[in-house]
Picture (tube, helix red, strand yellow):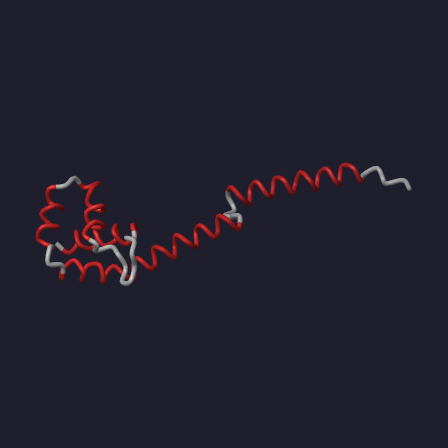
Length: 116
C-alpha cells in the first residue's frame, strides 16, 4: 500500500504541535499533574483546618495559666523563634491531637500579634 506524499509532513506537524501544546499548557496554561494537584489540595486543606482552629488557639492562649511567662518569652525572643514558642506552649496543638500543627502555630501567632 502506497501512502500519499503529504502523510509524513502531516504526522510530523501533528506530533510537533502536540509537543508545543503540552509545553505551553504546563508552563503557561496552568496544567498540572495529578500529584501536583494533590499536593495543592493537601496544602489548602491544612490551611483551611488551621484557619478554623485559630480562634481555639487564641482562646487556649488566653486561658493558659502560664500565658504571662509565655508572653515574656515571646517579647524577649527573636521573631523567627516565636512560632516555636507557641508550639512549645501547646497552643497550636489541635483539640485531641498529640502533635502541634505548624500552620496553626503561624496563624495563631499572627492572630495574637494583631490582637495586641
